Image 1 (cartoon, rainbow, N blue to C red):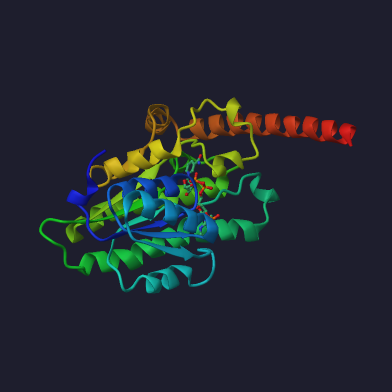
Image 2: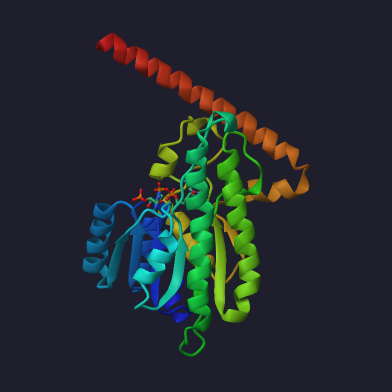
Length: 285
Ligand SMILES: NC(=O)c1ccc[n+]([C@@H]2O[C@H](COP(=O)([O-])OP(=O)(O)OC[C@H]3O[C@@H](n4cnc5c(N)ncnc54)[C@H](OP(=O)(O)O)[C@@H]3O)[C@@H](O)[C@H]2O)c1
């Protein structure tokens, strides 16, 4: 793994550090001796991770339990680390709200918009401003990784708003890569495909029915860290890369309809399995 300490300095702040891709980002960065600010809601999980990283790698950690959906959360986070130099920001916290758009409770969609869209944008703005003005040693730079998704590359029926939040992150990240170059800030948008985390396990669909190979969260985290400062955006995994690439060659409606068909089947398969399980549980009771 490339040594990021040669290029970046300061603390690394990771949102979504209690689980999945964010947690693996924290483990990789601690291995490279970055001091870490760990952010998510689950304080116990963050404390446990902090203890692991301190004892294994001797780094400093700061645990900040925070619900990023709450009003003013990004500003409050920024204020709580105003005494340290944050040189790397990884915005991994995110949720999905799957299901037919018209069946969704709009309040739940609004929470997702705040977490997946508002929070990473505002954090990039707050910490980007600091990074642009912080004096750096020698040729050192700052870095921002925004976690998007393969679903950002086309509309996805039954994930309509989720896919749109991730398309926002991808578009934002690409523009910021170009804009912030002059400030010596590298911005990378990381787009994972299906990844074996609690996020994927909670999806109400039978993922085995999708033509996707689930990746491990540590592989995805490493793809992100390896490509920071080298690319504008990266899709993790060769099959996922192919899906994102071939979209550019065909009419926009084709991948939308294909994903709609595949996800519809995977959802029906999940519902059939749940119905069978419920029936078996009732028979046992
Ligand atoms: N797994 C996949 O298949 C997949 C595919 C494409 C993209 N992604 C993206 O990858 C990112 C990481 O997801 P993951 O797969 O690692 O899922 P995960 O294991 O469920 O992690 C999600 C993280 O977000 C945090 N989070 C959720 N709600 C929050 C809130 N209101 N405030 C603060 N933190 C919150 C969670 O911590 P707490 O619950 O402790 O708050 C957790 O640390 C997400 O942005 C997701 O959209 C995942």
